Image 1 (cartoon, rainbow, N blue to C red):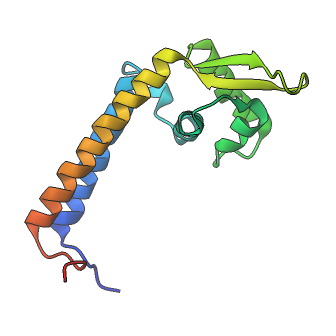
Image 2 (cartoon, one colour):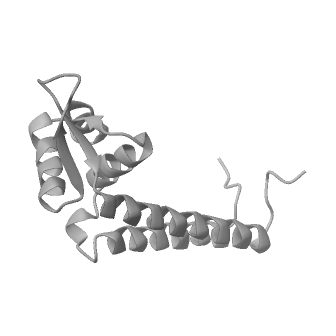
Length: 136
């Protein structure tokens, strides 16, 4: 299989992902403990939902974590840091709901603004660098 894009275009993609990674760490104020796919899965899926989610569902959001016990540690860490808020589920007293704190929702909104900006800049640069197999 031959590459569709040039090495320079591939490098531009890596620069974009590096930029997004740096932005992700910035929302945690430089705390690299949260530079993890588990936190990415957990927090972005809760952000995506726009409403509180059942805690058991949130545990399954972390795709690389197979153990509910281990996934619970990530949730507990997020609760302790104030990234998530846990409330009783009014529809089911046996379960809890998780939602993003207002501060974390705002941080993620800013993160996504930066990420989309990085994506748009990278796309322009990739197009300027060289041939695009999608061009007619």
